[in-house]
Length: 152
Image (cartoon, rainbow, N blue to C red):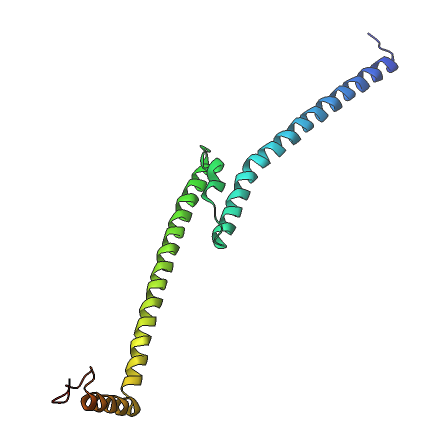
Protein backbone atom coordinates (compact mmCIF):
# COMPACT_ATOMS: atom_id res chain seq x y z
CA UNK A 1 0.00 0.00 0.00
CA UNK A 2 1.28 3.33 -1.02
CA UNK A 3 0.11 6.66 0.57
CA UNK A 4 0.91 9.92 -1.01
CA UNK A 5 3.39 11.92 1.08
CA UNK A 6 1.05 14.89 1.40
CA UNK A 7 -1.71 12.81 3.00
CA UNK A 8 0.82 11.28 5.35
CA UNK A 9 2.22 14.68 6.39
CA UNK A 10 -1.31 16.07 6.83
CA UNK A 11 -2.15 13.23 9.24
CA UNK A 12 1.02 13.97 11.19
CA UNK A 13 0.17 17.71 11.36
CA UNK A 14 -3.38 16.93 12.49
CA UNK A 15 -2.08 14.63 15.21
CA UNK A 16 0.48 17.26 16.30
CA UNK A 17 -2.25 19.93 16.52
CA UNK A 18 -4.42 17.56 18.51
CA UNK A 19 -1.50 16.73 20.80
CA UNK A 20 -0.79 20.47 21.21
CA UNK A 21 -4.41 21.22 22.10
CA UNK A 22 -4.49 18.32 24.57
CA UNK A 23 -1.16 19.43 26.08
CA UNK A 24 -2.41 23.03 26.38
CA UNK A 25 -5.62 21.78 28.00
CA UNK A 26 -3.73 19.59 30.47
CA UNK A 27 -1.33 22.45 31.21
CA UNK A 28 -4.25 24.86 31.77
CA UNK A 29 -6.03 22.43 34.09
CA UNK A 30 -2.76 21.81 35.93
CA UNK A 31 -2.12 25.53 36.27
CA UNK A 32 -5.62 26.22 37.61
CA UNK A 33 -5.35 23.26 39.98
CA UNK A 34 -1.96 24.42 41.25
CA UNK A 35 -3.27 27.96 41.87
CA UNK A 36 -6.28 26.59 43.77
CA UNK A 37 -4.09 24.20 45.74
CA UNK A 38 -1.57 26.95 46.51
CA UNK A 39 -4.32 29.23 47.81
CA UNK A 40 -5.82 26.37 49.79
CA UNK A 41 -2.46 25.84 51.52
CA UNK A 42 -1.01 29.36 51.65
CA UNK A 43 -4.25 31.06 52.74
CA UNK A 44 -4.31 29.36 56.15
CA UNK A 45 -0.54 29.76 56.52
CA UNK A 46 -0.94 33.49 55.81
CA UNK A 47 -3.70 33.72 58.43
CA UNK A 48 -1.51 31.91 60.96
CA UNK A 49 1.36 34.28 60.18
CA UNK A 50 -0.93 37.30 60.60
CA UNK A 51 -2.22 35.85 63.89
CA UNK A 52 1.35 35.37 65.15
CA UNK A 53 2.16 38.98 64.25
CA UNK A 54 -1.02 40.17 65.97
CA UNK A 55 -0.14 38.16 69.06
CA UNK A 56 3.28 39.81 69.08
CA UNK A 57 1.75 43.30 68.86
CA UNK A 58 -1.01 42.52 71.43
CA UNK A 59 -3.77 42.88 68.81
CA UNK A 60 -4.66 39.20 68.41
CA UNK A 61 -8.33 38.46 67.72
CA UNK A 62 -9.19 34.79 68.37
CA UNK A 63 -11.91 34.94 65.71
CA UNK A 64 -9.28 35.61 63.04
CA UNK A 65 -8.44 31.88 63.06
CA UNK A 66 -12.00 30.53 63.28
CA UNK A 67 -12.16 29.41 59.65
CA UNK A 68 -8.74 27.77 59.72
CA UNK A 69 -9.41 25.92 62.99
CA UNK A 70 -12.39 24.18 61.38
CA UNK A 71 -10.19 22.52 58.77
CA UNK A 72 -9.80 18.76 59.34
CA UNK A 73 -6.21 18.63 58.06
CA UNK A 74 -2.79 19.38 59.56
CA UNK A 75 -3.19 23.12 59.01
CA UNK A 76 -6.44 23.04 60.97
CA UNK A 77 -4.71 21.15 63.77
CA UNK A 78 -1.86 23.67 63.75
CA UNK A 79 -4.37 26.53 63.88
CA UNK A 80 -6.20 24.93 66.84
CA UNK A 81 -2.93 24.45 68.74
CA UNK A 82 -1.87 28.03 67.94
CA UNK A 83 -5.29 29.36 68.99
CA UNK A 84 -5.10 27.55 72.34
CA UNK A 85 -1.54 28.76 72.88
CA UNK A 86 -2.48 32.35 72.02
CA UNK A 87 -5.33 32.32 74.55
CA UNK A 88 -2.96 30.97 77.21
CA UNK A 89 -0.39 33.65 76.40
CA UNK A 90 -3.08 36.33 76.59
CA UNK A 91 -4.32 35.04 79.97
CA UNK A 92 -0.76 34.85 81.30
CA UNK A 93 -0.05 38.42 80.17
CA UNK A 94 -3.21 39.64 81.90
CA UNK A 95 -2.16 37.92 85.15
CA UNK A 96 1.32 39.40 84.88
CA UNK A 97 -0.09 42.88 84.28
CA UNK A 98 -2.29 42.53 87.36
CA UNK A 99 0.68 41.33 89.42
CA UNK A 100 2.81 44.24 88.19
CA UNK A 101 0.01 46.67 89.07
CA UNK A 102 -0.29 45.13 92.55
CA UNK A 103 3.48 45.33 93.03
CA UNK A 104 3.46 48.99 91.98
CA UNK A 105 0.77 49.70 94.57
CA UNK A 106 2.75 47.86 97.26
CA UNK A 107 5.95 49.66 96.28
CA UNK A 108 4.16 53.04 96.37
CA UNK A 109 2.76 52.27 99.82
CA UNK A 110 6.17 51.15 101.10
CA UNK A 111 7.71 54.28 99.62
CA UNK A 112 5.13 56.48 101.40
CA UNK A 113 5.77 54.74 104.72
CA UNK A 114 9.52 55.15 104.27
CA UNK A 115 9.16 58.83 103.34
CA UNK A 116 6.91 59.51 106.34
CA UNK A 117 9.40 57.71 108.59
CA UNK A 118 12.25 59.75 107.13
CA UNK A 119 10.37 62.96 107.87
CA UNK A 120 9.17 62.02 111.36
CA UNK A 121 12.59 60.78 112.44
CA UNK A 122 14.38 64.05 111.67
CA UNK A 123 15.59 66.20 114.55
CA UNK A 124 13.56 69.12 113.20
CA UNK A 125 10.31 67.12 113.26
CA UNK A 126 11.06 65.74 116.73
CA UNK A 127 11.68 69.29 117.93
CA UNK A 128 8.37 70.46 116.40
CA UNK A 129 6.57 67.57 118.03
CA UNK A 130 7.99 68.38 121.44
CA UNK A 131 7.01 72.04 121.04
CA UNK A 132 3.47 71.03 120.03
CA UNK A 133 3.20 68.77 123.06
CA UNK A 134 4.46 71.54 125.30
CA UNK A 135 1.94 74.00 123.84
CA UNK A 136 -0.89 71.50 124.26
CA UNK A 137 0.14 70.83 127.82
CA UNK A 138 0.38 74.52 128.53
CA UNK A 139 -2.96 75.51 126.95
CA UNK A 140 -4.89 72.31 127.58
CA UNK A 141 -5.41 71.32 123.96
CA UNK A 142 -6.00 67.78 122.77
CA UNK A 143 -2.96 65.83 121.75
CA UNK A 144 -0.21 63.56 122.89
CA UNK A 145 0.47 65.30 126.22
CA UNK A 146 -1.91 65.21 129.15
CA UNK A 147 -3.81 68.39 129.87
CA UNK A 148 -2.37 70.79 132.38
CA UNK A 149 -3.88 70.55 135.85
CA UNK A 150 -6.71 72.94 136.43
CA UNK A 151 -7.45 73.46 132.76
CA UNK A 152 -11.09 73.44 131.53
